[in-house]
Image (tube, rainbow, N blue to C red; front, top):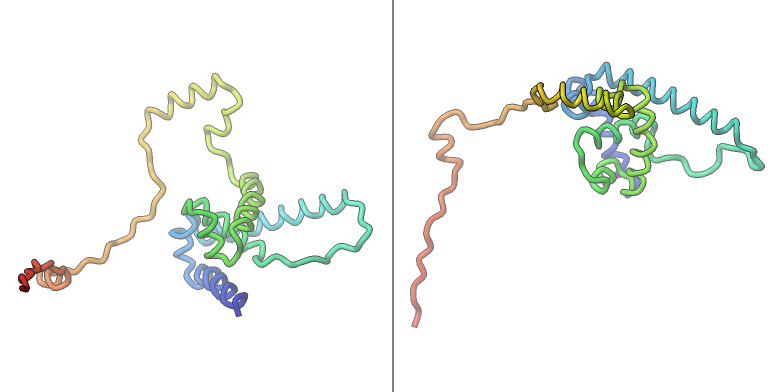
Length: 180
């Protein structure tokens, strides 16, 4: 019963993105098409790395045994992107995706370098090793405005004054009577 509940939650997150592709930008910071491309490339790179590790192993027992992961590779990537976008705790991320806090942390730390290989590095990361270039870039960047990556969401408010007045509750003073 417990396993089914967590699978239901996780499938709802994946299904939500599948059914509402326009919401992927709001949830993960990537358009749906970009997300699909990233998933394909990251999973392909993941399989290549697994094959490389398997080719170097000396096996006594045939591979393929053991417990299967609770999350598919695409769900693991979505977990990583969710952490990067929302900056939530691993405990909440684990609850959201139906895994333990430790597993959420392990998944994030596994996929972050893979995603980092696929996405272009920032200007600061490119010049981090060369201190003179780093100082020049820092100086250039101080001249620019800071732009925050956010998604504007309309706030639902009652349109008319009377509607607002009906919603707002006013505290009435409490009068206590002295009882002898």
